[in-house]
Image 1 (cartoon, rainbow, N blue to C red):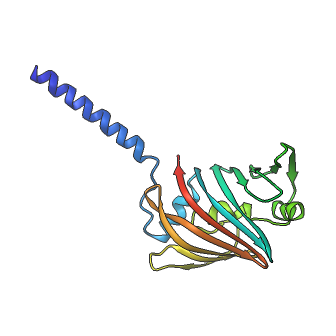
Image 2: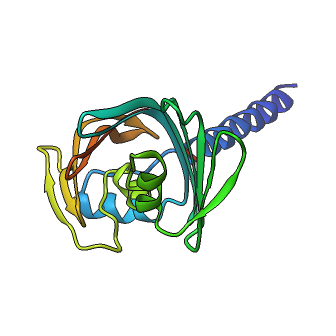
Image 3: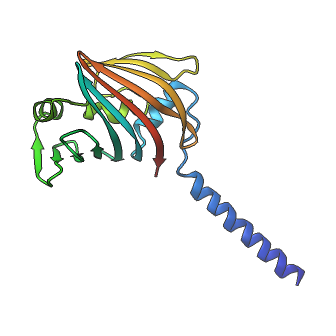
Length: 199
């Protein structure tokens, strides 16, 4: 009887440990050092975030909600709330980017930033945003990075955009960007990330 209880206890402990291992696999490793952080996050393939977005061009703009899912080079973004636009979906796979408008009409975009601005009067830097949201530069572009006291990216200049990360908060067990501001000329994009999920 004692042997059976012991065996059952060991089996239960192994099951619990296996469950802990599965749970911890969705957490990010320690990202304390910048080079480690940059390397790990560049190679993190499957994740998503949800939050709020504000876009302003000159005196006009909107506030809405944003959801982003990254799966390798494929991304899906949902923007909801822009006045006169409703909910739009932007999908990209490294070769083409498509926009699905509120009526379900799908349009292929040649230059996502230019085409969004021509269509709606506002734009966001979708191609690089997947990296900036993680708190790292887009590895395909030259960058000028500044760090906060914790060794995390606080300011970045890439292309025509200036990125400021004003706050980090817990995401996947590590400090991840919570508040970002992205500016280019008279375009100002504010992003507040409420929830991170790593798969």
